[in-house]
Length: 113
Image (cartoon, rainbow, N blue to C red):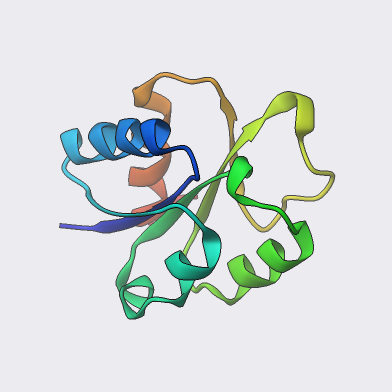
């Protein structure tokens, strides 16, 4: 079973994302902040990461972190606050239903992102 890192400071949203992904057969490692999520040894074995833009306080730091992560990153963004350059991640606009997220994760794990 593939593992996915989920990062969002919102506990309810984190539980919702975990439920969607686990219902689709994906194991989830969930975190409230970027540092702990990408600093753990389990990060090396994840198929991809799903990161809520609310977890990003320093976009330059996040960009460097994502580029050093050797797996795809799916960035959940609020279209009103879209950063200028997010070429290092696949973006999925909030709000969304579970299907687009699950499809994006499955594509990322399969190397189709």
